[in-house]
Image (cartoon, rainbow, N blue to C red; front, side, top):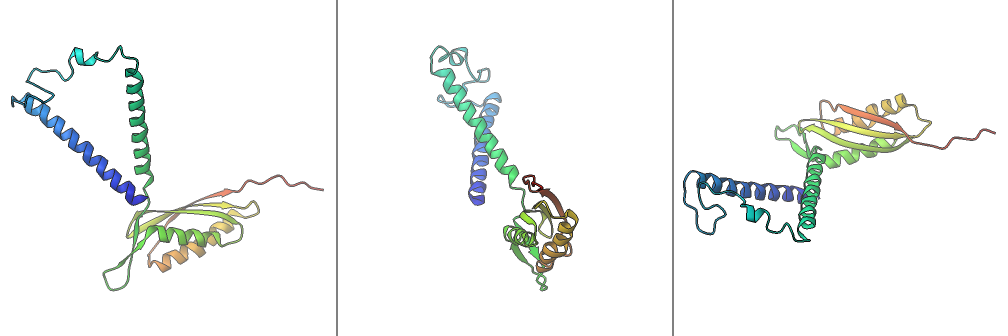
Amino acid sequence: MRTVLAVVNRVLIGLAGLVLLVLGGSVLAVGLGVRPPSWWIHHGRHDVLLTAAERTRWRDQGWWWPTVIAVLAVLVLLALWWLAAVLRRRRLAAVLVDTGDGAGALLRGRALEDVLAADAREPDGVERAQVRLVGRRHAPAARMQLLLEPHVDPGTALYDLSSGALAHARESAGLASLPAEVRLRSARHRAERVT
C-alpha cells in the first residue's frame, strides 16, 4: 500500500507540475509578445482567459451546475484523501543498525515496530500495544500506546516496558538510546457487583 501511495503521489505531483508549467509558460510567452498557434487558448497579448460568452455558455442548462458542483466535490475529497495519506506516513521506514564493520545495515522500521509491540504486550495486564517509530535512521524514537487492564498499576507497566521491551529493542538494534513517548490508557470495564 505504501509503495502504491508513493507512486500515486509522485505521478500526481508530476502531472500537476507539468500542467501548471505549460499553462503558466504559455501565458507568460503570450504576454511577452510571442505569437501563439491558432489553436491555442490565448490569441494575443490583450486576450482574456474566459470571454463573457464562454463564462455564460451553459448557465441555463439544467445539468451544468450539478455537474460543476459534483466535479469540485470529488476534487476536494481526493485532495483531502491525498493530504491525509501524506500526513499519515510520518513513520520511520528503516533503522540504521551498527554492524561493527563501519558499513551498517538497515532494519525495516515496520519489523522493529511489530517486535516492540509484541514484546510490550507480553507482561500480564497489557491488553493492546501500538508502536510507531519516528525520528531519523540513526536516532529513532518510539511513540507507543498501551491499553491496560483495570487492575494494572501504570507505574509497574511503565517499568516493565522500559526494562523489557524497550531495552530488548535498543540492545538488539545496537542503538545507544531509544527514547519513547508512552501513552497509557485503561480499558473500560463494567462495574463489579459486590454481594
